[in-house]
Structure formats: structure tokens, C-alpha cells
Image 1 (cartoon, rainbow, N blue to C red):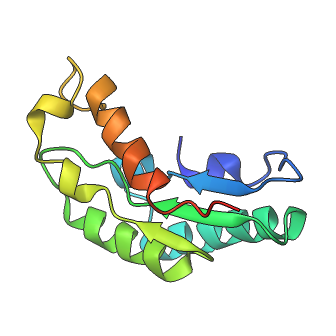
Image 2 (tube, rainbow, N blue to C red):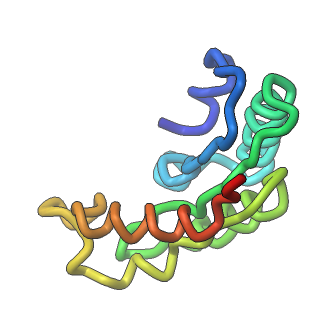
Amino acid sequence: MPVAYWKDAPIPKNLDAAIIELGTNDVRFRTSSARFAREYRTLTGRIRAANPKVQVLCLSIWSHPRRSSLENVINAQIRAVCPGTYIDITRLRDLSHIRSYDGFHPSDLGYRLIARAIQSKLKTN
């Protein structure tokens, strides 16, 4: 779903970490970068308001092997707007062996590699 889908979603409280992986469908639906940034900022602001001490981890989009110029723009917006740590998973996109049978979504190995990238940035208290 595009980020707009989540703008009014209930936000859980008492989170230690919030991992946000949005933007892929915004590229697919050609959401303008200004709208994306505004909606992403609203969502992350709501997460912070409900969880002032939360560690926010913002993942880059999971991109299609046939890249779009909008991907770089949306990733730049995520990096700029993220009120926490930006995690770039675009380096994984060229590894065809980590994509599922549909050629787009991550396979089990792909998800493990994404989880490893997230885990390397999580704070442990």
C-alpha cells in the first residue's frame, strides 16, 4: 500500500522500535515526491508522538530490477524525512537469487538479509 494508506492507521504505544518500509508502492503508483514526503512525515510524526522514545528505522524502498527514476527521489525523501536511522536495502535489489518466484518480492533468504540489515542498526539496551 502507498504511505497514504497508513496516515490514519492506529499507532501502537510503548514501542521500543518502529521499522518503516514504505515507498515501494508509491513508486509503482507514481506518487509525487512532495506528497510522499508530506505523508511520510505525518506518519513518522504520529509514531513519535505516540512513542517519544521509540527508535525509528526507515528502510529504503524494495525496488524492482527494472529501476525507475522515481526510486532515487523517494529514497532521498525517506532519508531526509526519517526521524531516526535510514537503512539502505537497495544494494540487495541486484541479487536475483534473493527474489521470490515472482521476480519482485524477497525470498526467504532476501527477508533474512533485510532482517540482518535492520538488526545491525537496532539499539540493544
